[in-house]
Amino acid sequence: MTRLIVWRHGNTDWNATSRVQGQTDVALNDLGREQARTAAPLLAALRPDAIVASDLCRASTTAAALAALTGLPVRTDARLRERHFGRWQGLALTEAAARFPDEYARWRAGDPDPGAEIETLDDLGKRVGAALQDAADLFAGGTVVVTTHGGAARQGVGQLLGWEHSVLRTVGSLANCHWTELRHDDVRGWHLRAHNVGLITRPAAGEPV
Image 1: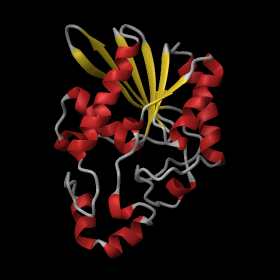
Image 2: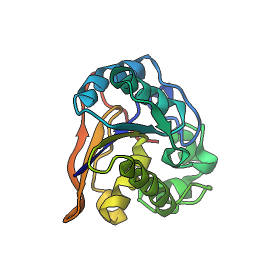
Image 3: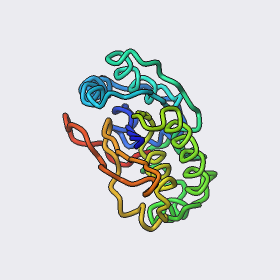
Image 4: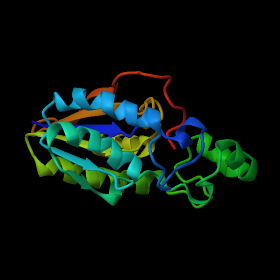
């Protein structure tokens, strides 16, 4: 049985101020680094065989905290990046709502293609799902930790599980430095074992953007 741990990165200043990160390369803040250091021993206890991370520094730095305990290298994969938020990247959510009211309303309603040059949920799920599958294939029968982003994690996991967008909208967002656990066997395929696992050291971040 293969175990896949999909781990969201630690907190950033943009998370804390509800600013749209998307694929902008924003570093962890002090809280984010603390969260990574706190979560890393819990994940190390799972005895991972491989660590794979988005190449954005907030994810790769989070993964490095686990690598420091396990001695494993961090492999990076650009397909694990967060959703590209097009013309919203760098804006506070309040600014996005003011400048793009129609697109913002569609996004809040769960439209998979809201406009404003935002990556569609279908495209996001396919690229992240493929990256997750390739990561799992590195050590079939073992444990692989993948460090990625909130929206990317949800859509990628949904792609592996075969869940529709309407189902994914009912699943709560991953808090910073929390993870989802999937397992795979030849009979059941991929199945969900746990979601939003981790330690709460401060109030959880808001929208996973």
